[in-house]
Each structure stands twice: as structure tokens, then as C-alpha cells.
Image (cartoon, rainbow, N blue to C red):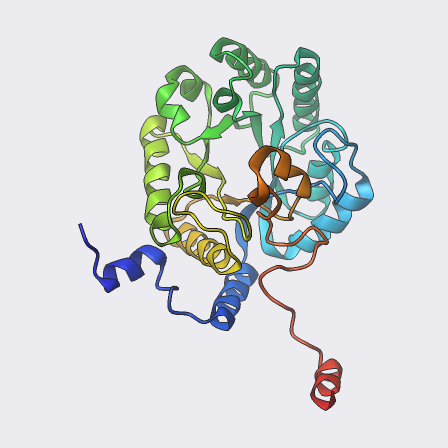
Length: 309
């Protein structure tokens, strides 16, 4: 089937003819209007998952994010990550707090205990027990369900779910049944979808999770587009494509009242090891915590200096 130009415009949000400056202006407007949520990138340059993070770095990054988001999502309850939801609450930000589960039983125990402790202390609005554990094959369904039941029993009044790729919830009905809320990761990029069709593809991903959930609320816990890298099939990373994807995602989420946690807040170089070269470029801010897709307006004094020079 061939698409006419107007059909293509509707699929890509009508952004393909905008200049780079026009995209930056639109991006800036959409960002300033606020996001439902964003995934919190904790690790500074030279750090990686498992390293101890500090209160100072969390506070500095939370201060940057505060004007733009209502919620933050965390991925772990150990190694300093347990401070993130506490600090978020100080800033008036709601929290989706994750316990990172893998194939290490002792670490899993610490993560689950940390999640329960934070929830009992009032720092967790939604609890996420595991992230893509089924996708990675780190645990069996029975093992994951045991952790989920443990958390639900300990904190029955806190909504609880499990995070995985959208299609896993149709494949694993027992896990879906155990969730209070369906926490679905939706990445057209990782399925090689071109930017032009990514919005309609993400809507389909979301709707498949909704169908599997049978009436349960579905939250998109991750979606995003890298700004640099080699690409995957028809999915091409670039600053322009990353801006277009962000704009389309946020406008759709606003129009259809979808809760979306954008991935991610800051670039993290360590992710190259697991995702290839694109892994380092998912942030809305770069690894030095500077905006990637827009520049702040110059003050009048600086503008006069720039004009004279």
C-alpha cells in the first residue's frame, strides 16, 4: 500500500518539513509544557550500574528535571538509588520506584527489601517489581511471581506492577494477572521502525498491552529515540529524529491522556556496553547535564555582547 503525502504527515505528526530551528522551537514549547514522567538517569560520566551514587549528584539532576516533569521512574533500590525517591518527594515529584531483579538471589533480596521499606515510609506511588526480567531470561515466571506476591503482601495499598516489553503481557497471563497496573516498555526504534511510522507503531504497541491487561491501567514506562549512533534497519538516530519522536510522543500522550515515562533524562556512556553505540545517546540532556535539543535564550546583556562581536 502506498501512502499519500498527507497520510505520511499524519503518521509523523506533520514535522518532516520543519527546519531544525522550527523543530527546536517546537521541542522547547512541548518540553516546557511538562511531561507526565521521565526515567531518572543516575550515573555520571565514568560511572556504571552497580557503582555507588551520591546524594549530591541526585539533587543536582533532580533540580534540572523538576520544572519539566510530574513523575520520575527509578530502576533500583540499592547503591544509593534508594535516595532518589526520597529526594524526589522533597521536590514535590511523584515516584514509580523499581526493584532491579536479576539472577543474583542476594541482590534481589536487598532490592525487594529496599522497595518495601521505601513504600512503607511513603516514598513510593507505584512499585515496579523487576524490569525486563522475562525478556532477559534472568528468572522463571514462578520466581518473578514470588517476588511480586511478596511485595504486594507487604505493601497492599501501593499499586504494584512489573515492567517489560509490551508483548510480554499477552504471552504471560499469570504475570499480567498479578499486576495492579501494566507497566509496558514501547520502543519502535528497537524494532527497526522508521521515524515516519513510529507514532502509529507505538500506538499499536500500547493497544496490545491494553488488550492483554483486560481493563487494567497501562502505563508506558519507557519510550524514546537516540540522537546518535549507527541505527537499526529503518530506525535512524539523529538529533532531528529524536526531537520529532519526543514531540509526537508528548502530544499524543497529552491528547489521549496516556501516562508516559520518557527514556531518558541524561545520556549515560556506560550503556554502550549493552546497547552498542546508540546506548549513550537516549537523554534529553547530555552526559554533562546540558540541554541537547535547545539552547536557553540569551540574556539582554549577553545578546548585546553577541551582536557587538
